[in-house]
Image (cartoon, rainbow, N blue to C red):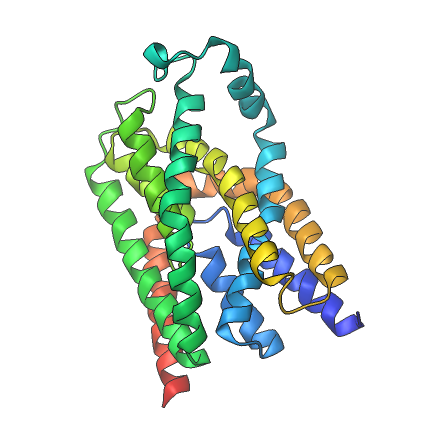
Length: 273
């Protein structure tokens, strides 16, 4: 590994560590960054973007360690009859939603691989931008109709949010933005929606990382550079998650999604001309 690869890996990890907590597509944004810095194909850049999600999964695990501990502690109290009652509702939600993510996520990953393998750099940027705009509009709609009067998740929340999280493997679709929007639409309060979304990201990100490694190996960079990217994303993610969660509560990031998506569409279109 040379110095240039180490710097690129650190920049990629930095971007992932910050963007994961925002309701914008960290995967799409990091993939565009990798393409710009390394000249990689969209397929390789997207695989690397999925790979570094494991770093921020570790950040979420550390930041929400108390909540994760409480979920694990509720295992002894779980029964099918009381699965979605208050003490075990989070556990049931996370397990069922993770299963739903696997059901929709694997076909979405195969579709993703087929799509990005056929795209040029400009077309890839346009695709990411268009999906980012759609994510922003979904968030705006969710914020507009949110009721915020539900205390615990149920089985329908789990199936809906887990299924959407699987589809969000496509670059340009914000995982956090989509899942938080769905929870808001279902009547959950904003902070609780963020907490459930970030907890759900942990098994999904680790599974996506494993899928990439098993199917393609470590993409685009050397194993040491990949390790640097993971370490930087984990450290930066942990340092920024609290500040960014607070920011998400105050700033209408649906507008950020639409703005970034529009710029990406224009920029990608210029590349195609």
